[in-house]
Every structure is written in structure tokens, then in C-alpha cells.
Length: 243
Length: 235
Image (cartoon, rainbow over all chains, first blue to last red; front, side):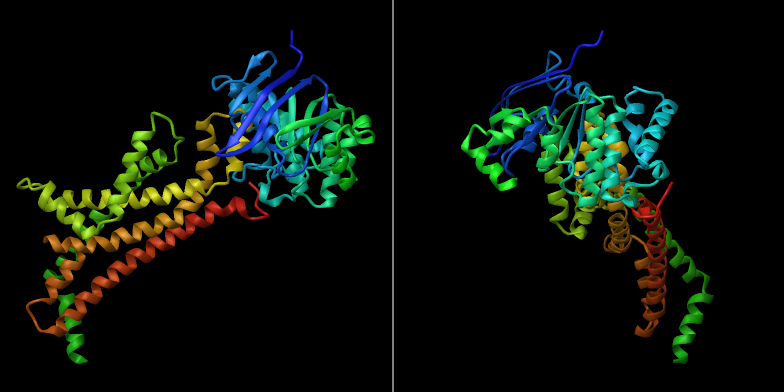
């Protein structure tokens, strides 16, 4: 029996030296939710996302994933279930597209090599990049890299997928392709948290919008109420600038 | 001019001289080769310690490595060689070639460690993060992701270090060892000044040819390693 996905974050704080980036974040995520995190640059939204899978180790607070408190000794196992897509793609430069996709599933003995390769091939065909199977990342465009990175995360069959500004480093044409793939992943029922500046996309895809400012969640709600009737002046001001 | 060619003819027709040059050259190669082996092995260990995460287990080794590289790089090689010969290995009958190899090996390790350390640190942190996010172990991340990329940055600088060691071994003549440099001086001495030219230039050619060969090999390796960076590259 599979437990249903649940992520609970209690009073999460993160400081870099004297710089307090997160000042007590409380957050709850249930299976099937698609949360979009908005906020001005420097507000801590990326740090918040990166703390969830300990890309940044939280200074204090608790992260509970499927009933388990995230700790040094279980973080590696938990990371398998929390996929991450980075702003700068982070495809492994010395590995081909295929090797990027199968490295973790094979190394972590989640799949046999031939099964992983078959699955990778299917996914690459689906995103129209099967021909690039044996190419190195340097030979791909930004949009292609990011779509491969999304597929790489999907290869692990994660319970939650974190997107850290997935389109910020892309040109407008590539943005469309990447957003289409994220939408498809989301429509398939994937639980996601997306940090993005694409307001239109946020409106359309989110089941919930969270607004972070100065390291705190200052407002959250459904896209409908968030965009139409912001409760705080800070969000109203932000929306006026970006819409 | 004809005197010069006479000297050339004399050098290459006197088996004793050729024998001396080759003996010296062999010693230069032996000291360099084993010193580089020690340098790369110890340098790798030092670099790994220096780039390891700071924990209570690594703090002391990190400090020791730091002191080691600072002292070695902050003092003259010739002085280190003297200390090895006249302070540490004063045991009678201990083969000088071993002492020289240790001295150059320990020296090269400090420089090689720097080369490897900066090679490892030059790998984009996003590469490590990608591995971490997938749940891979530090070990897998190092061997599958970081090391293969670091080697590309390390090889050219390591080639330089190898070249430096080969040329630097010429100072073993200061402790009376008969290397290529010493052989050239030996053959030339005891005669008039002009006679120095031929053996010295011959020795120079030996050094130059050796180093040219190494440069060539390093370039080839470098080219092979850069394959994945080329845009059209496929496996």
C-alpha cells in the first residue's frame, strides 16, 4: 500500500552568515497539489524550494515528508522521491543525454539498465528528442536541455517535483516548449511546487499560489482569489507591477 | 668555426662522453619519473583532503595539508634538497637517487595538490547538485560526475608540473649527483671554454626533446578529453 504524498514544513529558517533568508516558513503540501511560489527576487523563494530537499541545509525548523522528519541519515533516500528541476538545467556535462537519464535509476538499483534505457527512449521520443540520445548536453539548446532535465527527474518516478525557476534562463521560444512539458507533467497528476516569474502560467496551472516576501509566506490562496482579490497591500503592489 | 665542428665530432666519437651523457640523462629521467609518481599520488590525496567537506574528522588533516603545501611552496627547492641530503638523510650509504626522488616527489606533491584541488573546485556546483538531487551518494557523484570533469582542467596544468619537475631535477648536480646537467658540465670541464658549448647544447637538446614529447602527449590527451564539450560531439 502506498502512502499518499504529504509534505509539512514547520518554522523553516535559513541564514547565510548574518543574512537571514528564511524567517519561519510554515507550509503544507498534499498529493496532487500544484503550488506556484511567487515573490520578488531576493525574497527567499528559491532558498525555500532548495531547503525542501536539503540542497541548502535548513538552519532550523522541521521538514516532514510522508510522515518522516528529514534528517542527515534519510535525506538521500528521500531525495529519490523529490525530483528537482534547476534554473540552469544542470545536465551532467560529461554524460550523454541517455547516460544522464539512466545514471541515477541504474546506480540506485531502481531499474535494470535495459529497462531504464527502454523507458528513457520512450520519454525522449515523447518529447521529440530521441535523435539526441547520444549527444552531450553541450550539443543541445537551452530548451532541449531543460526538457531533458525534466525527463531525468521523471525517470525516478518522484512523488513531488520541484521546479526552481525552470524558464528563467531560456529564450521566449524555448519557454513555451518547457512550460508545455511542465503542464503535461502536472496534468498527469504530479504533485509540484514551482518557483517562477511566469505569472500567466502560474494563473493557469496552480491549484494554490504562495507569496513569499522577506523570507516569510505573507499570503496564499487559490489563483482566482490571489490574483483577483489580494489580501495584503504588498501582494497588490507586486501584482500591479507584474500584470 | 672549424674548431666548433671538431668539438662536435670529438663529443660524438668519444664513447666515454656519450656514455656520460646517457648516464646523466638516465638519472634525470629516473629521478623525474619517480618524483612525478610520488607527486601525483600524494598530491591527489592532499587535494582530496583539502576539498573534502569540513567535519570533525577532516579538520586536522585539512590543517596538516595546508601547512604542508604552504611550507613546500614557500621555500626554495634547492634548500629542500639540501635539507633532505644534509639533515634528514645523513645516514651513510643511503642511495642519493632515493633521497633525490623523495625530495622532488614531496615538493611536486604540494604543487600537484594545488593543480588537482583547483581542478576539482572548477567543476560547476550545479553538477554536484544535480547528483545530490537525484539521491546519488557523494562517492558516485565524485567518480561519475566531478572527477571526469575535473580531469579536463587538471591535465594541462599537470603537464606543466611534470615539465617543471624534469627541468628542476637539474639542481641535483648541486649535491654531487651525476645527472644530464652535471654530465654536460663534466664533459666540458678541464678543457678550454669553447668546449663547454657542445656538451651543454647537447644536454639542452635532450631536455628539450623530452619536454617536447611530453607536451605533445599531454595535448593529445587533452584533445580526447574535450570531446564532450564540442557541440557536434556524439558518443
